[in-house]
Length: 127
Image (cartoon, one colour):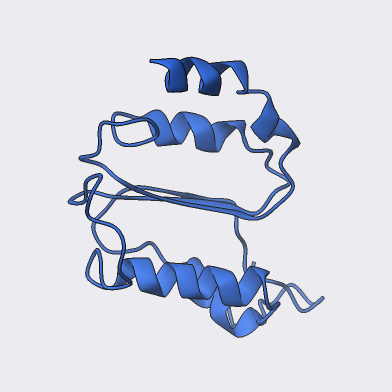
């Protein structure tokens, strides 16, 4: 209960967040920021000006994380793509982040394909 109260007291803090944020959660996890819509509420407090992605996997719970192969390799795929895109600046990995992952019970993102200045995405799509 103390942890929940601490989160509520600090709920304004994410509104100041400017660091790109990847949230991976399991829908069957009923702990703090697990299933039951808790992750969505935290995601919504992060400003839209901050790159963010919420991926809740429908079949995973609290103890199902820890390897890149969790969620049919989805955890490794999205974490690697996120790190390459936002830590190393390698835009070749961004397309992986634009596709909804397998077993997603919730998928929310404000990421867009970068444009080349002509209205065409650098990966081939048009706006």
